[in-house]
Image 1: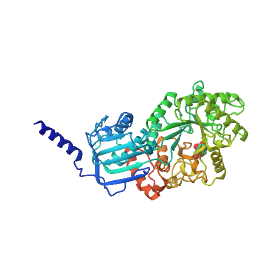
Image 2 (image 1 turned 90 degrees about the vertical axis):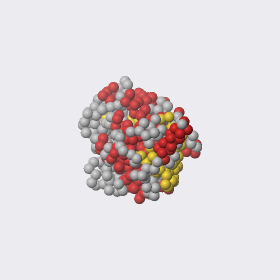
Image 3 (image 1 turned 90 degrees about the horizontal axis):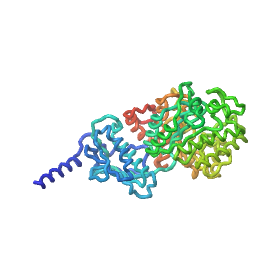
Image 4 (image 1 turned 180 degrees about the vertical axis):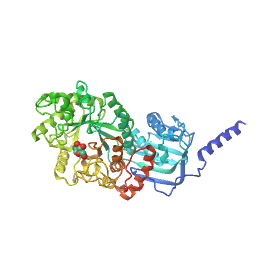
Length: 514
Ligand code: TNX
């Protein structure tokens, strides 16, 4: 009797696990369409895995957070319980931190067979990226936040994947127009879906100051009270900022705060008269270029408070001091200023990052330069060479490739064109190793900046970032040997139905094979 029962139970289990799913099984001959392209993908013809109501997510202690994250992705659309447990059976999704050290912190191996799914990594960032790849192998409707009908079938595959560059970033300008915490967190989700790991926040500019600084309350309350459209502005409290940092860390994204200096500072100068050489505060939204008052000692006392508080709030290694377009600061003042601020950053235990113009000052070897020059710009390239000579690493954000505020083409209703049009292919078809000749070994990675001078809404941000941002993410992640526009435009096309389900307001560019 007992044996019969057991047998019944086992056969029931076997039926649950291995029953063929007739409809909607992925076509095992079709190419796997994942972005960024993994280092290696081998399909296992004839094998599929199907998520079931009984599937568990097996995650040992160190992997439990990633397990919960995966469960949170899959539960709403599947309606399955997907408990996160420390033991499991065939048919489960297994997260394993015992992967070889050759995978590094961010690499992973994903194996999908009829018997289950395994993601192996050496560190939790790798597990997280393995989850992102698994996510893209599931039907697009898995992105829905309401229960959908399955089947939730994944084709058999083994993926082995490690990144080309360790620095894969986005930048969001929350100074020209302010975006609340929830939207920044949505951006974190979207960039990390494409395996980007850094979000640089442009927290201050002429048009707005967006972070509350203790002891200097007017910076945020007055300096943050409007924006480039003369709208209501806004700012992050320090608790808001902590929440962004916490959320980003849960997605393996490091926040880099930027306070742009010594130019792009009208909002600060307007908030405190004492920061001005003549002691008179300019109006907010004063047109034209601005500069901090380099000879005034209070400039550095104030920056010590600002940088000190940001350093305290920011677990990442870098504080970005801007340094671009200081067009009303003399060259001598500029060098003096950056040298002093470099000391302040170091005194608070951080390393300096800045737009590549900071290389005009006397930087130490730990600084990182954000290169925003355009192709063949000899002045900019000369500064990149200075960076190289000092051992400063370069993050490549060339304006004519990565600037997401440039129009796609002449028809794009919003955006700028000073660096030309950045089509989807333009933003993908370049190589960070050769963009500035002769600096390949000093390139840390890439960044996709999204400036918001000329558009105010969150829909605008999404429209300009998608579908270009995944191309820059891929340039940062995928081996050069995988580079192919023809292949990429098809893999990118597969993201469209996912964005439709997620409600991402992307531009349906005719360049992409949707
Ligand atoms: C140049 S890029 C700037 C920004 C503008 C952007 C607009 C850089 C370091 N400075 O202040 O927002 O162009 O495209």
